[in-house]
Image (cartoon, rainbow, N blue to C red; front, side, top):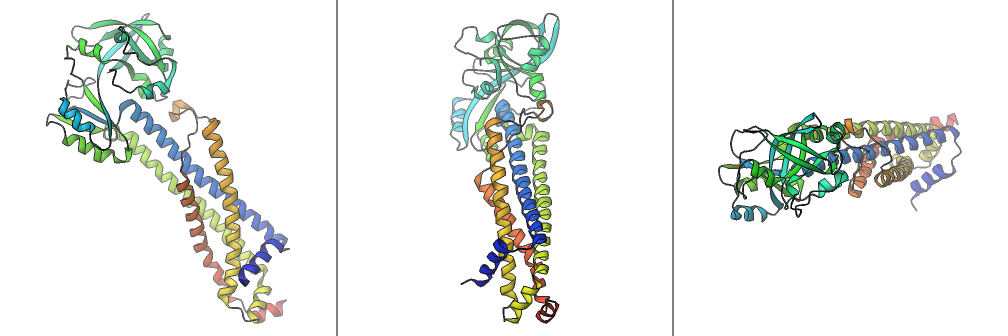
Length: 405
């Protein structure tokens, strides 16, 4: 029979100390709140990072192949990849596809109102699934339509500014010598909630840009390379670059938008700070509960010592008691956290201001592995921290405690 465990159960379930019971409830509540704060902070920050990363990847792809020159204008110098180059790149382990695109500066003119934009031209090989998810009206580009060159996707921001809706037409002027103009039709309206994207970019046909710039049917401004595992983006960028001629280069979105990804990387520090603060609060409450429990039962400790029980065995009684409190707090905290997690991921009830956070709702993303790992870390740290105050038991004299009783 495990006698220390037996005594710990008696203390937990049949103890009649009113003050220590209050402390126990406070301790369990503090631990549950710590678990809720830690897991939710990890889930929210990770969800936020994932959402922002998905938007950057969806609009700009993962790796960009462009000409190796000093051109920093909105329009890239035209390039053309041979079929052999494309085949070698597509066969790389982490590569999904390679598609051409081009950009061209233009001015939208709607009833005298003008907006400067950057037309991103794509063709029928371009995966429009991300654009389809961001549409608030209309449809994606239909390259089977003979008039697909005149179709264009604009942002809700531009549509509201210029009072445009699906099927409306307008004149677009393209910045070149001589300036050319085309009549365009709004095929769809998208909304990414990223001011930089929504204000600057519109989506149209690559063939239109080719004709405006007098390019060959195989020429493009650059190529987008989509990959499977974003964690291997640096290695994949190097592998793609090795397959390119010396006149071309490969860069990834982390290199193109360092401010965005450095900002996302800094969010990891918030996770660490919240984890440390919440664990410290929980441990302080656990230590307080343990010390009060020991002081309230000094007489029992004295009797047990006089009967020959070793300090190590008595210490186990109170550590078992602490494990019960930790387990109770973890169960309550995890149940509440998972309930909030599934509620938010399914309903998106808690909203955000998209003009500030780029997202309309509070995003959450966490795996069961992360939840289990966080729980194990909390238990491990708490038990180590509680072992030191439990050493107080060895300083209690059985003679003094029995006399005091």
